[in-house]
Length: 206
Image (tube, rainbow, N blue to C red; front, side, top):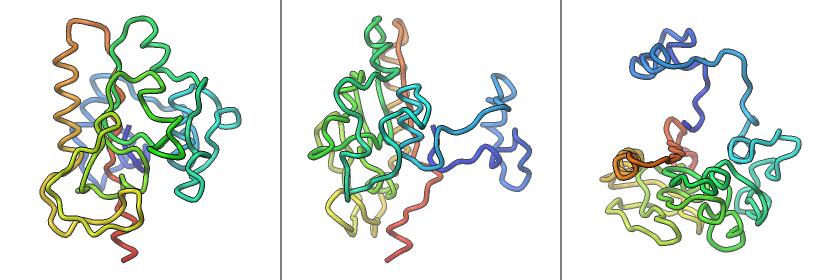
């Protein structure tokens, strides 16, 4: 999954201004979907639709509640995800990248490892994910400190880097490749949720 990437922004769907040769090659060698809708128009409910397989009118998360009401955009105990189903039949499961359906604290019912994922590395909330060079990422429920220097905004990891050293999506690529290599002899499910091309909203507002 790519964050804020419209289908019409890829060459394989007719766009001719921005070059997307590798994604175009994937489409040529694989499948190209031409009759579909996103689960929702914004981040959290679209991710909830993807994870639960439920229509936007039925899935629990209906909008981007943000830090004003984090529990409103968190999965809860009993919500069944594709990772739950695959884990139950023996798949090794991992989420790498942006989650957006639960966080440490008031929204911990939605943490990835409570919804079928054996491993998680990335961002828990969307404000934190706006910064592509964050001060930290999460590995499961533990903070992994990064060498980026960040001007913080708010209390949930948001901000912008003033000394950008480690790019999060590069770390995610390494993590995804490691997971595939480690599990190449067994069934596995990898949800690789990139942050690009989403902009850093906080950086442009300050």
